[in-house]
Length: 137
Picture (cartoon, rainbow, N blue to C red):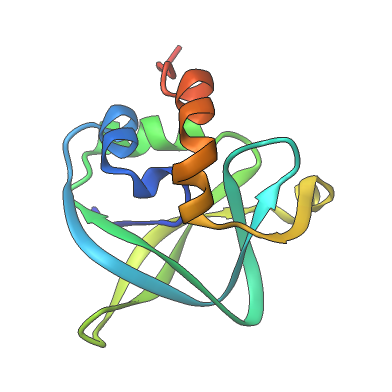
């Protein structure tokens, strides 16, 4: 599988390519029964399984093995890569990877829904300054 559903900073093509390398944007997608919330003192969000919520994001394809290795390292110990099913704008369903927040780190989550529009206006510049310099050690 070469697909990844992103729901936070990686929805920005420039950030995604910087972290994962060349890939193809498929388009908007949604993940049912997962909630997307802000992480305390960070610009990025986390998702966790929670019935009744929908997380909107972007689906990418053609991610290389090296790209996934970089993404795994970028996401770090608080997230696990998991296979989920997302729904595309045309109503079709696709299996893909996404990064889900591990339960043992739940104390780092807020109860505030994360907003991509607010990230673009206020958080992206700070995020880029802090994280886009990411390189694999």
